[in-house]
Image 1 (cartoon, each protein chain N blue to C red):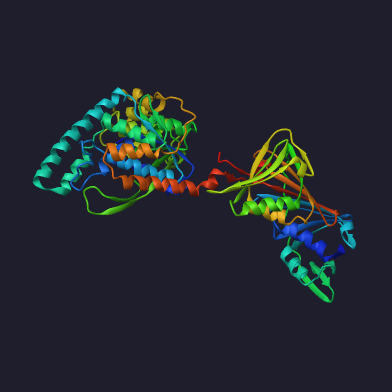
Image 2 (tube, rainbow over the protein chains, first blue to last red):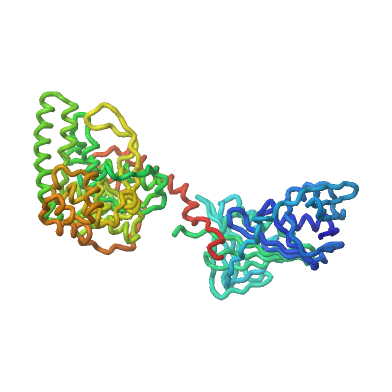
Length: 245
Length: 346
């Protein structure tokens, strides 16, 4: 059983973060909220998400798994204005999800979740942690986008750097310690990432949020941030590009 | 040359692109011979520079390696050391045949029979120290690693493929399999459209890929030792083989009797030195090679060596080298690594 009401912009925030990587996802509902784990089809990026019931205006749920087509939720969100309340209700008999926005009712089939098992989450120990605002990350990405398809993230005890190099040009965003929210790094670490993934992930982070970046050398990066007015948390993992071995 | 086992071997066709990022240990003499016999003027005269030095092999090595490097392949050229004494007879025979072919070529030229001249010239290809040395120099300028084998280049190349230093050995000869190469790539240096010797027709030659394990499996052989025994029955570079026994009959004999000696006993034949030949294939002298590097081609030196010293057209050499330069630009992304999956950390 699942029945909830949520502000359209909060739902949009949740959907944007997940739909960056997958079109459909399995939401694990329980009495306190829901969580979700999904990996993109190429197994390059992963999302783990927890949202408390406090993110919703109203929330009641049993322990249940709902397979949801995120594109369909987006269609409903397009019908809503900011501040509108969206009512979501599971129709167990017909195996449907029913959404109400104002006077509109949208019914959608739930996605078959057999075969949608939770991905296994890599166990990583990442030596460096950088905390920065999402706006700074956006700047670094914009600078890199015109130059290359890849972006190198480097942390040293003094600074954090986003660097990309093309045929002839290169771009760097260097953030010294003073401009970071925090920096824990004992020795330099550096990994290279595909810019398209990284950029899409960062774009889905709410503006002005603090993002903690966990980084190693030739290791996946972990991005952690909060959504739904701090009632939800997201961990993104992105696999690096590695010199061919 | 080498053992002829084609009747019992099935090969898979590959494209150059399939070999991207793969290290291939190439039997250098084998490759150079191919260039020497294929790259010739219409009447069969090899290409020569103003001072009369043969340059067919340099043309072949330049263009073919540009193709290989452009496809992202990492070639290693393995040169022969001192040939085994048992091979001397084969070599002497070959040399005789070459002298004869050379004679016939001259006759054909004087008679104006171009087709025959070309055919005979192809058979008269000869490796000289100068050819080997100039090949080494060009390969080094191209940034391609060169390995000197203690004995057979093919044995060394096969060894490098078996110990993982290379992904595969490349040679025209099936001997590489006998020497223990788990993977053999044939036609690497001649794939494409080729004129057939002695005919006016053209044929598309594909790269062939052969796996030792599959050859053994398909022929129900238990081990490489049995394949070697079969080859010795049929004839190798080191022995003439038993008259009237080809790969198919030989295979049956080995399958039935298990090993060379039992097979020979069964048909009341004898191969002198059989054990010694087995040893050449199974246990010849090899050296450990590691840390080979592929460097940037040295443009200036290549242009200098080929254009100034050997009379190559400078434009053609630079345009070949330019292909590598533009390839490198395309490969910028490769330089920045390749995407890995998160599964690696699960």
